[in-house]
Amino acid sequence: MASWHQNRQSKTIGIQLLVGILVFWSFGSFGTKKSYTFHEGFNVYHITQSFANIYIVQQEDKLLMIDSGSPGKGKKIERKLLDSGINPRDIDFLILTHGHPDHAGNATYFKEKFGIPVVAGRGEKEMIDKQGGDNNLCPTSFMGHLVKRTIAQKRYPSFIPDLSIDSPFNLEELGFKGTILPLPGHTKGSLVVTIGDAVFVGDIVRGKILNKKKPTRHLFVCDPIQNLTNLERIAQLRDINYWYPGHGGPIAYKSMRQFINKEKLK
Image (cartoon, rainbow, N blue to C red; front, side):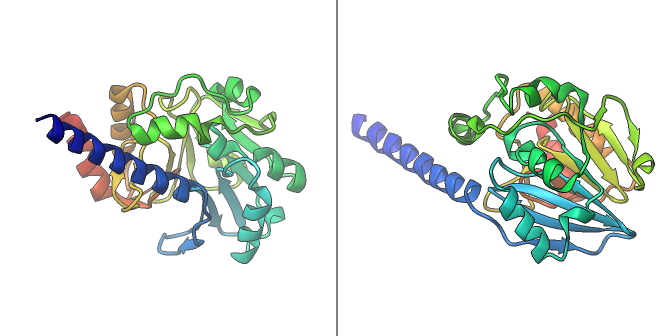
């Protein structure tokens, strides 16, 4: 019996080590740039940096950047943008879904070098002032504990957002057709951006490491009930067919609906 338990423990440790290797490989690499041109009235350009997503939404002659990647990667992201035919100087605004380092890490870089105004949730002020530090991370898995001790410890230069959001905001004020919705949960000032049939949801959900279009819980969820409520609120928005998370994706509405229904049974 003791031998069986030892073998089982060894297998568990082996699986955890394999997951750890996948995490560091995924979080330390640049993915290939992609573009999604099937939306009506806008295109989405997608750059994966350290498994975190940066999105550029092109709507007519306007460009909207959503999230900015991990600290110290600004020059590499700049080159990826140029390779995609996007001049960072043409980007009109940068919206941060939240203030964690892998999403707000290069906000200062793009703000100072290219003069891109930064939009953030008002509730993120404390985290931004702490350069991305967050003492309220609640890991949901071994992978979460690993990331909490490593990647989540990175810091970025603090900055002052040009626009702070704490209530629903019509993007027409910035020249776009869409909405910014404050959705506290993952962090105090988390934002969700809706444009056409797409919603950019930050870290309320993520795509799996080995199947990026299949949704799963994020690595950090302190209040699963609140998180599920937020997911359901987004799912009830009209005409949303595609979810663009901060990691993995994009995720089709049908897959999200199935995931939400399963979460309700837990």
